[in-house]
Length: 90
Image (cartoon, rainbow, N blue to C red; front, top):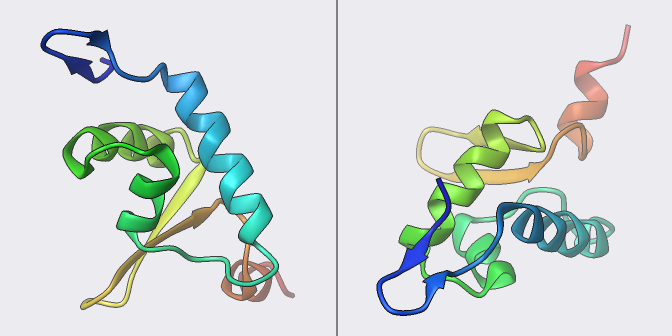
């Protein structure tokens, strides 16, 4: 199910959203690997409620991963960052 605007119809195609997120996070990956939800919504240029559906779908498809410390929730590209590298060490 794609986000719809009552008058304009489809706001953003899922594939377009996925491409924007992957490109945006890849560019910023040298600086940091985890991002707040609002950072992702800004990349998509969508309101949080609409962006949440797209972002959750990307998590389900394992394009993004969700990370929570209990008080803070962050998202990142699957397999990116220090924690991902540490988990794959023998």
